[in-house]
Length: 500
Image: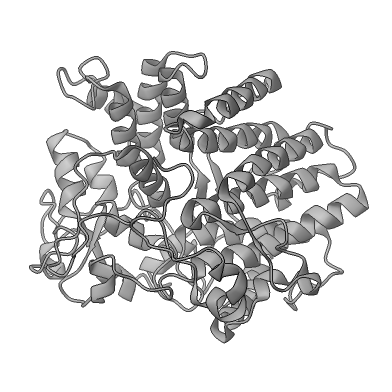
């Protein structure tokens, strides 16, 4: 049932994107989500769409919203069987680059806004609390991608079709308030309605929702770790998290969604379905995206068993893993390089990750190492590595053997001279294929891992991974005055507020 709603919703979204209209400003333009729909029926569609947004391909069948970050961050590269646009290889993209990141976020924000407003009217605090937290998640992603975005005047429908832009820092600060408001609603208990199985992320487990809210706040606080002027705000928010007593997501507590994925057309897990057709044959995307030599070399050199989870051996071999570097002019054909691995593409019915348990544990390890929270950073670090192994189908015992290797910097805790670098390096190693946005954000924040290679394409005139995306073409066409007020935007120099 949920998949059918998801499919029709995405079809409507595809048509709206193709026509270039400003539908993210309108509250009710989707005929499959009419105003008579109850919040508990809209929620699973919205959650499933978030899963698609983070890991799936676009409604038109093109590469997924954040797949390009797997190229930038050293996880994947393009196959020699396919060409790639020069603008994609040298970072010199235009305003038309990956516009679906913007448009799809605002389209789904309408769904969560509808749940928020209708649940408030109907006296359903749990549904309203969930919607508020998910709205905060999507706005956080928008801010981290674009900086200033429409916020207070967005999602108002025809009441305001030309929204002004809010300052990114102001949005961030208000998102903490929105998460707190959502958590206060959740803390009321079951109230009049627990969505139960319609909550396709936590199945109505309110304690996990509360942990998720705190974990999302911790992510946003760590984003600001390198800005001295944010120290007071950070400490105030940390005190609030501690006082809540809810803690953070831990081992086995993945924030992931599954509306009932099955091996039928448009009903597969969105990541798996982007790479394999329902008949089991590789798709075009599967033939395009192959292993990046940087990632493969990292796992090989550190004796990491996750190598065989993130990549498949070269065809015809059982132990030969190979790839090329992003932007190389000597890209190998498919028969000579590794495919994306079975630890990422597990099955047609696998869950879609929103915020994985190992990410939460790595964030806690970093926060503990900075003295922000209590807890032993070494224990949290090792638990995070173990959890990342489990999440890609390896075992905790293998993880113990891995991080116990004597003398290996950025693997063995005691041997690592820079503990923050060790945490972020291992966090990067755990996000291959499923959370490249987080890897990109840590790289922008800390410059870690230090060895992530710049595109090797000869036309790469700026030897730097971009620090943001450009506002989409639709904004310059439909909201020109307000986006123009942001001035000239450059992907290499116009910083998000938390970037140092």
